[in-house]
Length: 107
Ligand code: FES
Image (cartoon, rainbow, N blue to C red; front, top):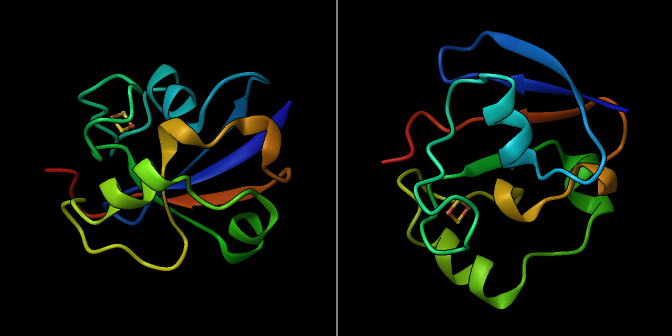
């Protein structure tokens, strides 16, 4: 299992044990982590699963694909260099202890 720390919109944090084979979006929702909407349920069509990865985690995984990259331009909160759509980031690819920060809002 991979331990993830989510930084919530109110500044508090929540640690979860993530299950291999799940996306970060699915992990957040299944652990009742506040801050993800995931309107399209992971179909790569909404940008309401926007998150900011810590620098080390962002550097370790493959960069966003073309569609993810385009959608990030439509996120409710302006994208940053480590922005990702959490439905496209698999837990298995993140280092243990990755820190994932939620934006202020998804809509
Ligand atoms: S849940 Fe819609 S793009 Fe990720």
